Length: 287
Length: 237
Image (tube, rainbow over all chains, first blue to last red):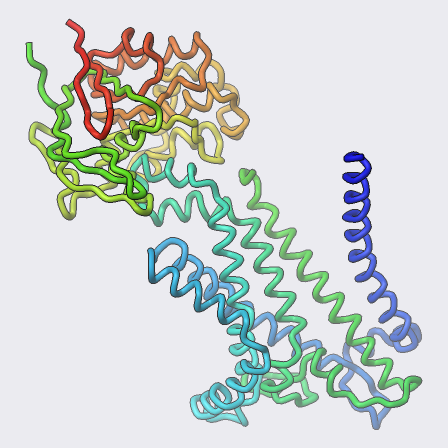
């Protein structure tokens, strides 16, 4: 009886795992099927390099590709050191009430709806960027990246803290017992042994930065142009999908949206895989 | 002949999680002796050791009153004095834990690690000292051909000897051992006991032990921790 029960549970979990894995493949297939007409005619190259000018029959998404990469990678450039620093502050440097308070604050930040970040961006950050750099409207790559940093950091901070906490206590005691400082303990033992967790936290945040729509939509300015500087307005692939108005399902415009989806999917996959591969080298002793 | 005193506690009170481990305990530990600390399990023997290298400070909800003074370089130093360098203290007071805790590094780096943290030594010096300590801990013959493989692949007994080697490399003046042979087989335990008798020549050893025959074999003094006080039970003639 018990065996049957265990067997049933096992089948259920295996099914769930395969089902969710299959789901992502199906979504990719669906996008591929709908975006195929644009890609099949050998136009994949022109889509990647051309500008978006529907009235001229050009449905290139190159500006959006650049916009997406610029905003998400820049935000990760800000967010990773910031999150690592915050996690070290919470887990290593501060103790007791201060650590608890900081942690609760970060936990609260994860619950704030994205649109609130967007509003704060429009009314606080955008004017600040406009005043400070005295160039353009302030709705630009930099503003969006800064706000996105604030959005992806809390989850990353908590993930890092959890990874640090999972390093066995006995390792830390071993370092302290031979006259190591808390900082030495962190850099020699805690960080190397929580590295796989740090890599996963980074990839999750990267996925979120690439896929986020609202922040870029509200703050980046959405101009269909390839940004030349951090103060230029830009449009991301996700914003583009949200903004293109296409009622006709047969139109190339509509199909171009699916091309956007395919590229977004591919970027996320490639970047996540690259980060994982780069991260693997550090896992040698971490068992 | 009265031996010189190495460690002296005065009115030492220690509580952990609201439970009193020590209550106003004043006791002296003689230099270059093996003192065994016995007592019923759960009486706080292991925790008592932590008051001597201040390692309890990393544990939340502990409190300590009173003083612990140690004789370094001919004079007594209060190790709880404000500004006393705790890292230096822990280099002079080595510790081996009950459950072997090698770091997830190579065998070589585990032993070299305390010296690397301390800094200021050449690779050759470190290499020579690592070999010396591994030999002292009776581990060299078993690992000399795989020094750069992970320490976590060693057996429990080998891991414990590795931890002893790691504690020895800083040439501590005091060595705290928390049931160091409980994970070892008879032959290895005997080898470790022999090693402790040899180390005693220039090291003060405090040994928490459950094994009465081990205590009678190697300890010069036996102290029992019971109901929050340390009581001298007996001394070898």
